[in-house]
Length: 288
Ligand SMILES: [Zn+2]
Ligand SMILES: [Zn+2]
Image 1: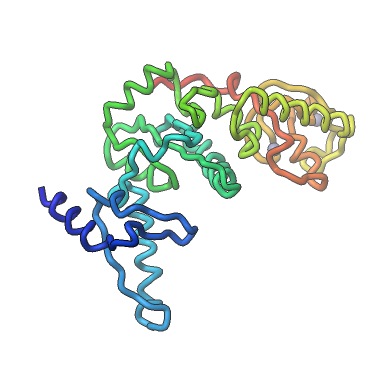
Image 2: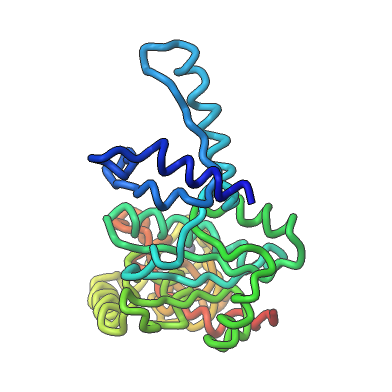
């Protein structure tokens, strides 16, 4: 195949005696050998050159589109060794999957932004390539290619019964939790690295905080009655429309709930830390 010729040329073209790597703008070095088998574009350009400056944003856009589709950059599984991995089982036709995606994207950027070695892999239950492409184009992370046989193997291994599901795997390859979706919904990026110890600590912090919340509040979204601090199972917050938590400000008469974070807006420091979701009880599993 032509790829082989190109890769040979690439190594010759891009390696010198002193250097066999390229750089990224975050300081990372990328070995020329990692580019073997990829489609590579050379962009000769300079910041003093007007037409270059005009062209760069266009190229960035195209690069991001292509690399998010996986056509442009191939990531070797060996590159993932030693990282925290989240397997994200999901599909566009599944409304809870679509609802969970923005939360996961936000957590992903926050976790990576703190310098953690973290990667998400989208494992699709979409029924055709174009829906896969469309859904995956919204995601900033890696994916198994559509229709890849490893999907069945992974679904079986982790006994995935419904989607969305998120399985956290530690740097040593050990499965940390199959309930990462619930923890992410509950704590956002703070749930990382999903270990039992860490989650226990988070829960204790919330219980401690709950002691400081008022027993009753008046809220503009429910002027009829006072809202009582209560531990609830599955419910929908009438403030942000998100589902399920343990602590709530609740009107029993009207079955009206507000998350503590939504009820106590002015006290809010971190939008994730006050919510405790019980996702398990909320949604019937969607079979894949
Ligand atoms: Zn809310
Ligand atoms: Zn009421």
